[in-house]
Image (cartoon, rainbow over the protein chains, first blue to last red):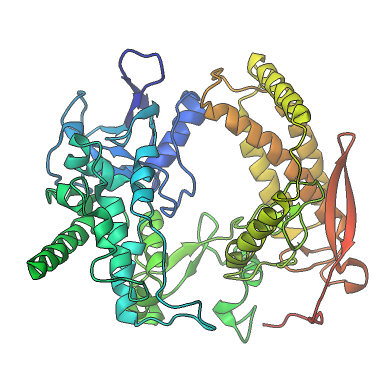
Length: 256
Length: 301
């Protein structure tokens, strides 16, 4: 099996691709393959990772032209072609380099974020958008003596969004984010929606949704839906955005 | 599990379960490759989906097993460091201005065995207490003299230059793998004097070997090979601390199980082990355990 890896460091006129030949062991993940390269073949390869267990969201990268977590993507499944995801096309997933999908695993940095080195991207913009939506829980009542109990059905609805691990796979899969560097993006918007539907929040009408009632917020989404398809935790940002847009429309109509 | 924890069976604390698994494997009842099966099937699909969706996902992603259909292959692994930087209840270390919270810290709430869910105490409770203490202290601290910090940066920089200048030597990963073997085999779940002495010798040899090794990558920016090298140096020091603490503690307590001292010895060892470095030599000392409202009792599961 060949691992074809994007290489770049400051000062290079253009990135290059290095191909490493590996023998995949049973159950080997892309992250383990990258470790193997770093340990055995080329210790200058750089990539970000932390928990190795699909919890921390640090190792999102473009794997065979799909944003995925390297730590939970099995090499064998990739080679067998089991993990196909039909994404709406955008420039970063067009064929920019020649590779053989049957024998090679192509690994590139997450699109739409500046590359610092090899597979490491600068997440600053991503977190700036996250900060912009003020992802802070503001309960409507003073701290109670006991827990704030919630209806299990409400918890379930919330969980669909609190499961986000901020890996930015959705950001790298979003055609709009690729075109509009000011777009708040699926992760931040889905997170904002999570506070909107939290029954413990101090929401007045759509006051929480209003934080992203700007041209580069809710309204910039073009409903491609790539975000829903790539999220490693099953978070559906597109669905959240559609519901938020509907709520805002309703409110505007009522005001008229 | 009935053989090991009659009452709590599969829900026994992790040290009990870990020892049970090791014993089953050692006595030939494990599967090839050294593991046993965790069977969740009696819980049924609904309960597994409702209560253990994360566990199910992990089993599917990393072992290719759906616990609703099949048992999950498991074996003990290092999971959490119960020791850490010696701090008081506010997270303050003995070095003024240095605070620690979380897994790197040792507030001593866990003792010799962290029970399930207790890492939340580290994050939720001590994360906040330590932050509050820092906010309180910062107001009273005058602007520190930055000369020692600058001198330290210069000296660390020079040390890194020295490491990167080294040519040849062993591959760092070889030493790391060796250390992993030593720690698993000599300081793993069942410990014993002779094996541990041997292990300590191996650790000292590895510390010597790492002082001649160097990453091949000589870049100064984002050099992960250098990070791995520095981590290995640190881990080998930590390995020695674990070794010396474990050797000196001639009893069994919590996750520290000595086959040569199988009983808990409150008379001599109801105390915390501290490991320090003086003139580049490691030494072991102790600090009394504060029991508070709890009376030490025999653990029965």
